[in-house]
Length: 263
Ligand SMILES: Nc1ncnc2c1ncn2[C@@H]1O[C@H](COP(=O)(O)OP(=O)(O)OP(=O)(O)O)[C@@H](O)[C@H]1O
Ligand SMILES: [Mg+2]
Image 1 (spheres, rainbow, N blue to C red):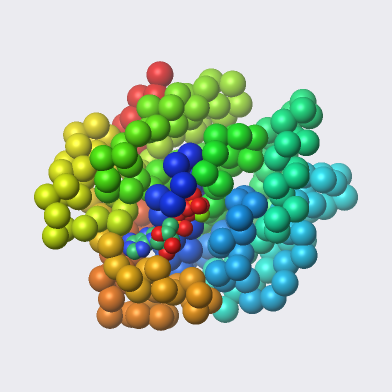
Image 2 (image 1 turned 30 degrees about the horizontal axis):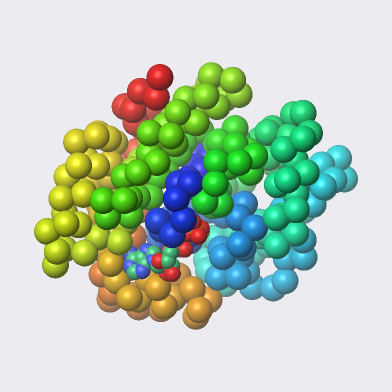
C-alpha cells in the first residue's frame, strides 16, 4: 500500500480537489483507495461521504485505545473509494493534542494495525497548517504530494514545508519523502501561470508532468457529491486527473519516487 499525505500549509491550493479526484481516478483504474480526511474543515467528508460519519477520525485521537481505524472506514458512492471521515470536533483536538507526548504517532499506529494491505493507496487530506494533525499525516505516510497553486504567491512557504518534512524524517519517519509536486489551478491564458510551472519544475525535479488546469467543473463537482470524472467526464479537469493517475501509477515499484533532498 502506498501511503501519501497531501500537504501544503497554504490554504486553497488544491489538496482536497486532488485527494478526491486523484483517488477516484485511481479507483477507476482498478486500485483500491482509502481517503483519510484529517482536516477539521471536513471538505473531503462532505464531498464524498455517502452517510453521516459521526465524529469520525476525532475518535482516534480522543480515544486511541477504544477506536480502530478499520471501524471508521465507510464506503462512498464511488467505486473502490472508501473514506475515513472527520467532523468539526477535530478543531478542539488539535489544541489538546499539542500538549500530549507521543500524539504525533496516533495515526501511524492505527494505519499499521489495518493489517494485510486492504488498499493499494491511502491518501491523507491535510489541513492548511503544519500543526500536530499534519505532523500525524507526515509520520504515518511514506510519501508527500504537494499541490501548489500556479501563482507567484503559490511558491511561498515551500521551503518551510521542506524543512518540516526533513524534521519529521529525522525524528519520526525515516522513509518520508516528497514524491510529487503538483501544479494546480493553471491558467494557460496568462503568461504568469506557465512561468510559475517552469519555476516549480526548476526547483523541484519531482514535479509531475501533468499540471491541473483551472476548470470550473472542478469547482462545481464537490457540491454534486461526486468526483469530476462522474460530473463532467469530458472536462479538462477530468482529463488532467486521469493523466495524473497514470503518472502516479507509473511511479509504483520504484524505490524512491522523488529526488528531493530535504536536508
Ligand atoms: N483546477 C481547479 N480549477 C478550478 N477550481 C479549482 C481547481 N482546484 C481547486 N479549485 C477550487 O479551489 C478551491 C480550493 O481548492 P481545494 O479545496 O482543493 O484546496 P485545499 O488546498 O484543499 O484548501 P484548504 O487548504 O482550505 O483545505 C475550491 O473551491 C476548489 O473547488
Ligand atoms: Mg482542503
